[in-house]
Image 1: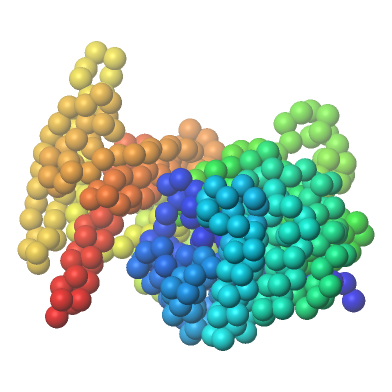
Image 2 (image 1 turned 120 degrees about the vertical axis):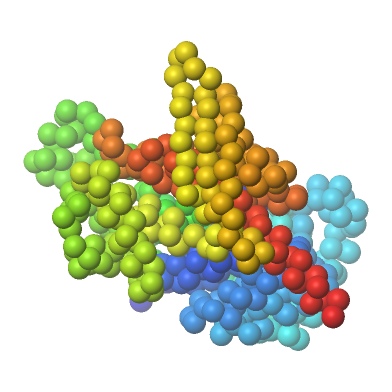
Length: 518
Ligand code: KIV
Ligand code: ZN
């Protein structure tokens, strides 16, 4: 039987450390559930000691998941380990993940300790964690730059102390594939008790080698791969889950290993993560980029028409990319629409389906044909929608080469149990700026736009424009997303969503503080 490669997904921990990628609880639960459907073996749900929000997210994910192991990250410290255990102990399969640096650079400069002190700390932490949980992972941070003899000593001691998974991270993305493969081979060969643990790797992409290094590790005996969806993560990111899973599938004789990833769920998972984090996938990204299956040159198109395998090593449907067919329009009924949603792989509550159908009809009035991408954009916007404190009734903006961009906005506000109609006008540097200024006059909130991203979701001049933006309010960042055939309207929807999220968050924080006092 083939050896199995375990997929340890850290989208919700290392991935969430990407600048600006933070997600709220509801969004993290959506990602975690989708990762379970995708078939990952372990989900690292967060770093519980880092904030009450992280603790809550790890705890809720641990309660929710049915078959996936849920891990939380801890430094080699009792308080961190207790926090992880508090958050994951309710999981069907809990794991405590402890990390501690083993490179001399980190030991001296970051920890201000000696090698023997670090070895002692590792053993003490693993032994303590083992009294709480049977599944313990130990990570030798900056292993890629650690002295190999010392690294092997720490690995042996951690296994003796009870670690069941040993992770060898290339924390700063420094090693070369051949070199990293040799390091894994050396650990496998020289650590006497290595057969008692699974060897894992966690590669960063600073030199664009995270996937190559992870695959080299598999060739040399690693059996757990730490990765993220779309390769998001600290700095240049982590190894991309989808690239490793597909490399194993496309080259079965080369790797001769199996895995549990249902690759048909890859595209949907990628869309969900990019939509919720606001980190767009580059168009030429392997597997999930918009151009991954596009053939532009005449020679290639001719070859593909004769036989796809001339220029395609995998089919779009293998990774769940929907055929962009002209399936629906304004005459399509509820039944056809609901069937399409199901065939795109979404399972939504009845209430959301009805709401979506109403919005689909509005869109179909504006746009002759509705592509699968349009429907996916509507679904993702709907999934994110939440309690509206401010509801957009009306917006209008005018701009041109000889006019000052001006906007009028009318919203209804359900603040403090009363509905109020509020209206304002403003000028700006462009129609979007003018509209946002009018909204700011209405809400009187000190909210600052920190990023704004506009892209066409589908094709043609009547394509849906999707705006993802981030806004800072009271020290927290809130993401908003809106889609429309009119880009000012898409921008307003996104801005209003971020504002509503900020107000809900503020209210919830106040409620929590009040109940903590009582
Ligand atoms: O990059 C790294 O070394 C990490 C550890 C916590 C595993 O993220
Ligand atoms: Zn990392």
